[in-house]
Structure formats: C-alpha cells, structure tokens
Figure (cartoon, rainbow, N blue to C red):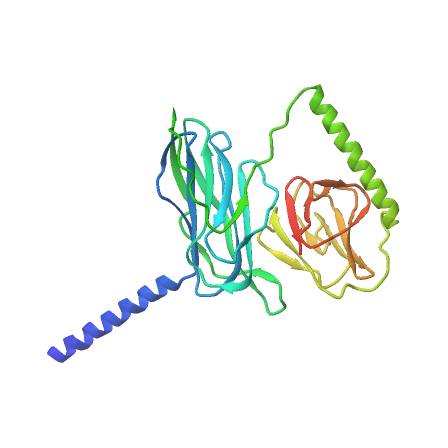
Length: 321
C-alpha cells in the first residue's frame, strides 16, 4: 500500500511539473500596467509582454486608445538589437513595429508604450492585434503561428485634477515615435499651405512622370529583379499578413479576380499594379486613391524601394520590403 502511494505521488508531481512547463513555454502576448489611476498631464506606461520558445526577429502591435483622453508619445523596446520601424499613425490607434537582424529569445517585456493623459475620463487601452515575427527558410519575415493573445484591455481612471511634474522615465533600447497625425486647422492660411503642398507634389509627380516615361495601362518589359520582395500588410482586410511577389505583374484591388483581393469599400476593383522592369520594381495607380510615403500617386507609375509605405483607399496600408 505504501509503495502504491509513493508511485501515485510521483505521477502527480510529474504531471504538475509537465503542466507548469507547458504553460511557461506557451507562445503568448499580453498587456500590463503598473498602475491604472492618473491625473491630467501624467504619463501612462503600459507594457507589451511576450513569451516564446521560438527565437523571433521582430514583433508588431496595435493599441486602440481614446484621443479625447490620451495622446500617444512613443514606444521603447528593452530587447537589445530590436530596432523600431516608423509607420504612419492613425488617430485612435498606435501602430508599432520592431525588427532585429538576428533571432532573439523573448520571455518578458517586448516594449513599453507611453501616453500622456489629457483630462478627466474613464477609458481603456485595447490591444487590437499583436504578432511575433520569424524569418522563413526563403529569408522573408512571417508571423509566428500559434501565438495566443492574453490580457487585451487596461482600464484607466484619469482625474481632471492636474498632476504634479513627473521625473522623466528612462527609456531603454530603441525609441519609436508614435505621434498621431495633427488635427486639421481651418482658415485661409491652412488652405494656402494646402494649395502650395498640392502644387509642389504635382510638380514632383510631373517631373517623375517625364523621367520614367511610363504611360498608364502599360507595363514595360525587361529583366525580372534578382531579389524577391514582399508586401507586409499593416492596416486593412489582411493586416498582419505578407504577400511574396513571386510572380509579376501583381494586380491589387477589390475584385476577387485580382492577385491580391482587398475587401475594402474604399478600394476600387483594380486599384494598383506592381510590376518590374530592368531589375526595378514599380507601382502603378489604376485610378483609385493611392499614396506612397505621404505622396499622392494618380494614374502614373513610381519606383518602389524597400521600406516604402503604400496606402490604398482610406485604410488599406502595406510596407514594401
């Protein structure tokens, strides 16, 4: 009887150890905060945490916030070798992306995200999406499969009373600005500035058009690029996915017959085409709203370079690289 009890106890301890080990090494991402009560003008710091048994080479996150209560400042990663990749920010949603040239093991804080409180309110910070990135056998970045999202929401209580001056918090690692787009200003001066910007970009676009000499609807013939690139979707129907450009040209639009179909009401049936000529990639606008690195492209072609940020319509956005 005594020996049976010893065996049973051994099995229970072995099972408990195995269960704890599985929980410890499960791939997951979650959000935490050291405190949830603030005064107006104070800095909110939330931490994006992760644990992964697989070495990663980057990560991404999107956190939704109320712009009436909070203003995003920046993010910083304490992981040595992780470098921030600046992306266009949307009001109410911070979009962070980090990458490393070497695989790194993570078990703890991925990044600290900072906001400043704007006034008395009750609000939430919500982790809309997050992913750990690995490098595939072909050498491209891809999200690590099987990663679970743990705690997504942080509830904040912000007092309308102005807080006292806070000492600057040390920021370790690569600092990534998360400034939201400035609010549009009304008045004659704003219209004047806008008109000047439009004229400048129109001149640049016309010069580029004359230089490249590619007419809309025409795809030049030439050698395929020696290096294959991909589109990394950051916003829109396929956010978090990547599309390798193994076959060219590539048609992008809302029509299901396209090579990349974007079910987005602000994207037209055939919105854009990506093609190559003489070892160079090009993007051609086919009549929709297309913006590259903040510049509007209208029914013309421009050269694509690694790191270029492309927006189709109002919210479908990808990075070429």
